[in-house]
Every structure is written in structure tokens, then in C-alpha cells.
Image (cartoon, helix red, strand yellow):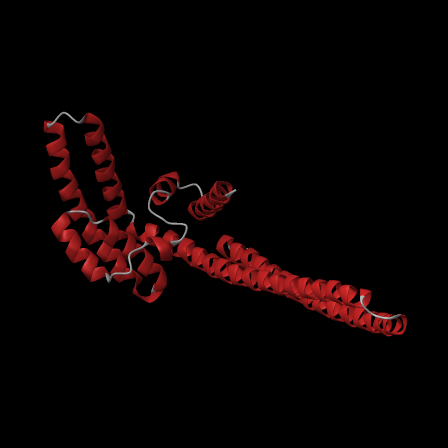
Length: 247
């Protein structure tokens, strides 16, 4: 079940990216390997400057690039600055990759060398298409962040609903135990006491039904509110989709 849910999430992300890239297959192929379904979980929390400094030492600029693309989505007014950051990181990545490629070629690792060659081409593409990459990535990540927020709230509502259900089950179990206890007590009573006990039991049963109905109405109210929120979120997704298409 978990695997199927993950596959559906991935398919949804791919569909969104395809929609944003349109007929630009090169851009889609590049971004499909660079963007994340949950950027908050996948992208480093470190500052971009720190990631860049670490990359200068290690030669691996991927974390810094990911951070720059993501921050560009969060700071649309500084988009030009992030374009320059990416264009600055690309040649550094190319240089580091070329050095590694020369090394593995000498070692005869042809598959690894081919992989590094593709990475170099990707970095050239990133430098040339930095503006397009950030434009599409910004729209993609903005939508993903909305979805992440919706998922968090949906999970919280689910926990709340399950809490109500657990409490209702606990109350019903307690009421059932009370009925069983009173039934045992009546066996030890005289005829007159039994009649009074039965009357009291009927009054208690009516009260139990009233409380049960009240809990049921509360539960249905929670379900109606959850449905209203989900409908509103769905309408929001459709509206954003129309805006992306320019409808």
C-alpha cells in the first residue's frame, strides 16, 4: 500500500512537471532529475553560502544547486541573483566533473566515464537555460509546498478523527461494562428492587442513546468539515492549474 501511494505521488509530480514544461522535452528531462516531490524534506537546511563553501572543498555542488533553485522559488524578487548563482556553480561543477572523468577513463571505467559525461552536458544545459529552469522550478515547488501543507493538515485531521473514534469506543465499552455490572447486581435483588432497577436501566438506556446520538452528530460534523476543506483544496488546485495554463 505504501509503495502504491509513493508511486501515485511520483506520477502526480511528473504530470505537473510535464504540464509546466510543455513541449520542451530537454527541460523536462533535466528537471525530472533535479526536482523533489517534497523539497522541505529533501533540500538541505544549511545556508546557501555554507553549502557553496563546502562544495568548493568537496567538488560536489549538487546540494548548493538544489538549494539555489529552491530559494529562487521562495524569493521571486531575487530571481536574477539566483540565476547568476546557478550559472556560477555550473562551470565549477563541470570542472570538478571533468577532473573526475579523466581519472576514471585512465582506470578504464567506461560506464562511469559515460555517466560523468552526461553530468557535464547537464551542467552546460543548466548554465544555458538557468532562467527557464528557475521559472519552471519555481512554479513546481510553489505547488508542491501547497500540497505538503495540505498533506500535513490532512494528517492532523485524520489524527483528530481517530482520536474522536477512540474516545467514542472507550465510552461505549465503559457503558457496556456498566450494563453488565448492573445486570449482575439485579440477580441479587428482590422483586421490588428489580422493578425499580429495570426502570432506572431504561432511563439510563435512553440517556446512553442520547449521548450516542450526540457523539454521532459531532462525528458527522467533523466529517462534513473535512469534506468542505477537501473540496476547497481541490477547487484551489483546479484554479491554480487554470492560472498556470493562462485560462
